[in-house]
Length: 301
Image 1 (cartoon, rainbow, N blue to C red):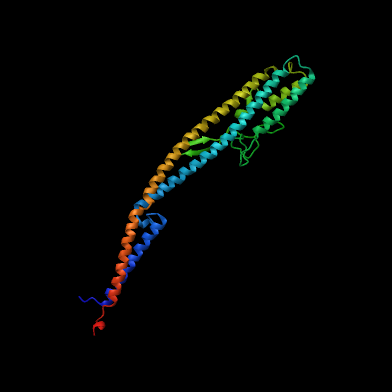
Image 2: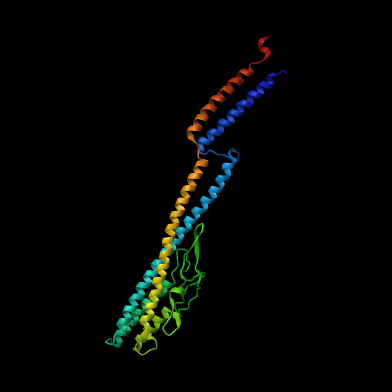
């Protein structure tokens, strides 16, 4: 079989191009630090990388949800703390107002302070978060929880939640009807704001000891305080659970990142050695091509 000079030259060119391609690929790997530049480099690893990246993104989203949930619950806890302080102060003023030694002017002064505190309490119950959503309206987050004039509850009993882990949904809200509406001793149900307002009116009229239910006001206030304290307990329990889930997420993220690194990251020592070998191979291929170009019978005539 006769092998033509052109065939030998073609093989030399192909060998040189192949060496150039392999060298260029290795150079790209070294510059990017990634072992796999395209799925065809390692199809099995490429599929595993996609799965790990999906799990990693999802876990990082859970971590973001955990931060958002904790922030909202922290704001809620701060508001409930202020609400408890106000209720406690109103209770103290009520004790003073129920003292028979007070004259009508003194009771009216106490009544005025109670009203101002009550307005602040209503304002707290209508608090919004950083997104402008009402914290105590249940699912009706775009609706003001309580009407400032009638104290009517405009929300519902729903509790919004966020997924902070693969199997964990955390409730991030407390509906206002569970905190600020209670059943009085006479079995009537109304917002605590109305109960406070009625008591202030009785103080103004100097009829605090004769008006219906005014003698039970302190007990009603204790009930309201207990509801706020219970809500704070629930919020605190969720915040603790979020902290625990965040730790689980962090461990999962670290493990996924480690697995991803093992699949994607380049072994620089091996790559540099391969790069040098390929550079030598390309140089040899180029020299061989030069020699092949001189193989012609005309050079010997």
